[in-house]
Length: 476
Image 1: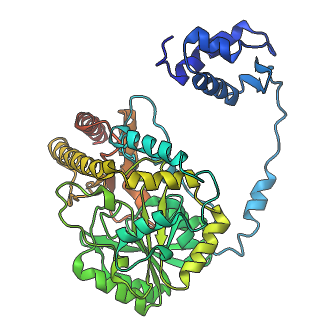
Image 2 (image 1 turned 90 degrees about the vertical axis):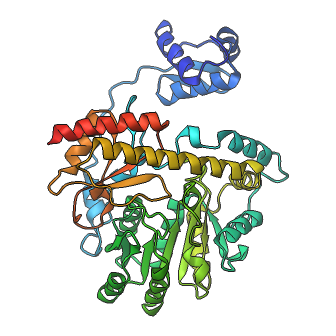
Image 3 (image 1 turned 30 degrees about the horizontal axis):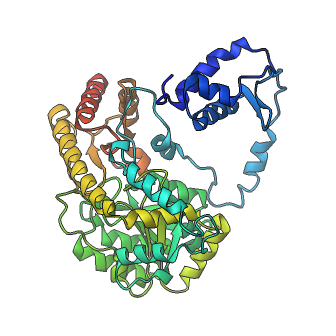
């Protein structure tokens, strides 16, 4: 075995060799495995850890690794009591606390081998700045105090970097570092609305937001969007009808439509919220995934808001890696202290090595080059997917092609069973996202969301659309 052998390969070899050992028998030492397979001690350690997690071996510090004893049949427990316990407060709780997280799981689960991921919400590894992140993490680990407890609000230099990116006079003192955008949104909703309260959301919207709201016992109230973003007259009507004190939106390259809140609507949204005595949570999730032809981007809503109406959320995750979970919450006024209190109760703080690595990454010369590279790649992928959809799926409408983000939003013909189409696509080895997952109420029409960021390149896009077209033909 050569040095390049992976942890998975070594684990598989050891798994096959376990039959040579009786239960409780000792495996060769780590040093013997290193010499025999010509791998590093880290590879051996990780392979044994994988087998231990599978219950196949037992590791004992100082003694080595042993084949696990065959487990006896376990007596089945009786968990039926939990149905009563989990539902006991149903009469007092105005909103069910059970949560359908299937849409979130679909973007995080690893698909079977050979499946093309058009449902992925993150950059493919070929687009991630892996070398730059590794170098940043290595430099961060050598910083004095890198492994000590960080300031609760986050490293000052990282808070300052986020503040400068938001603009509008936002200062580092008005920024909190959080562990990813999902965590930041969870903190914001818990801080700004009590259980049972309505929360206005765009329709359609990001399914993870709907899951957050329902998990917090909130009632999502949909407000329709068009290619210019949320419709102000319907937003005002929703505030009047519900008495809501919170509206969550994505003004830039909205998920899933790709809409950008038009210049003329920005001030209207802030005015309507201010008159309702409400907050606006601005999820600025893909500002760093603008395409090469996007032109000058509109600034965050928070930059036009001196009165503290907007609570701003932004993240590094989408532009780097799903595991690089560093984001920021920015707010003005007394609400900042409430956000801060909930953040520290939930998480204490974001691990300092990760914050230090973020400071190193965004301060490196390679950061700007990475963003420029991704901008060009996403433009090429967007154009390739739009062209393939037009060629192979002419019956599906593509009303808007955004110059940012990572997905297209397709309108299906009336009467289409989008769940059946998604199931057929998966049988054809391409994973897609049914549109109804993005609606807080009954969907007005069938849709499909296709992501082009999580695939290997334009060749895989072409093959994926071909497979989807095959499933579409099988549905008709």
